Length: 116
Image (tube, rainbow, N blue to C red; front, side, top):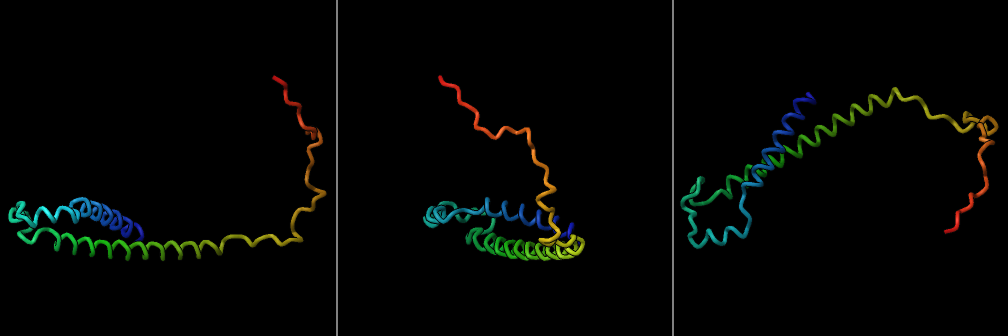
């Protein structure tokens, strides 16, 4: 189920990018209102605004719905795998500081900087 959602998710993303790239900006409508070939468009004299705007809105809704679905699936997987994680060590179970090895060969002095 998750893999099907991811495939549909990628297709919706590509369709959204394509539709957004095909849409004209608000500045392009000014030229079309003065008769700049609006009657020769593919979608009719009303332009592509209604069709592409509605399609973009629907795809955006599908995008958000699939995003929430995938987030829910990821949350469920994380809660299932969290049961297998061992408990955190308590403070009294920590390694005593006497058992920590000390590097006695390390020189604790500051090295001299050569003069130029």
